[in-house]
Length: 319
Image (cartoon, rainbow, N blue to C red; front, side, top):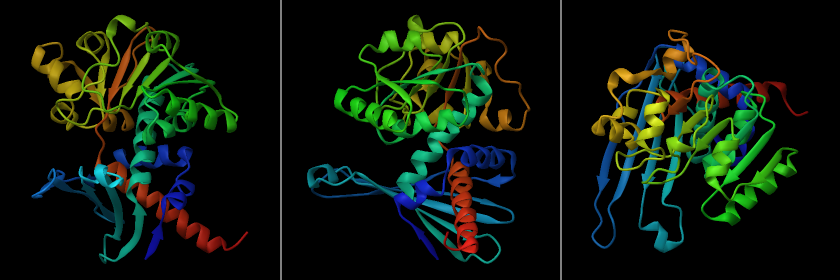
């Protein structure tokens, strides 16, 4: 069985190929059961959780992501989340590859957002604002540049030093990047705003948006979290990655509860966009908004791509 650490996972998942692999995944016939969530009780600290996210194709590959969430690790100086992905042969059940789950998740999350933007943002979008300089946020500029002609990247983060670090890394890679210290000004300047935070209150407000923008919301993965206010939701054509977003994300659930958004207002899903069942952006002045919560299908498509690239490298031999 092949084992990929974080560095190998990054190397084997270039964003141009990853966008296409995820698009192909959404066009395929894939079985994606509901996520399994198990509580792991603790006596002397906050309970831990075990998450299992399986998916499989009828032929080819299947896989499962295993995630341990241990809030008590903060006191130990350890990461709260540990994740791994196991890819298996659909016909034989043989385990083929063990992949670093954190790196796989970060790259497929950024790639799915960029894939949606390729179909929803204006094709002449050149300025990207990234809100949140964490693990996913650091991947977003590279994913978006694989999808659209992004020339300038602005970075806003509550902790300025983290934004500074990302800006420096982007510049070292030859990307025109700048620190954003005023989120309102940054939103008004950007063609695309991609938000990857853990906020429970809106970071993006409809009053700050301009015609023709594309808004990408990544961070809210519980009903209590949100990154955009009701006005932003009302003013935008809203798309979601999967129907799970309606119940899992406060960015959709809260405005639905307030009446700012109805089920019939949701313009479509990422699968419908990839299959060309819906058209996407209606014109250059429309504000579009994409909300993702992630899918085990994306994990499977990503791991399968890494495996195919591993086999190709082994066949090619040393350079």
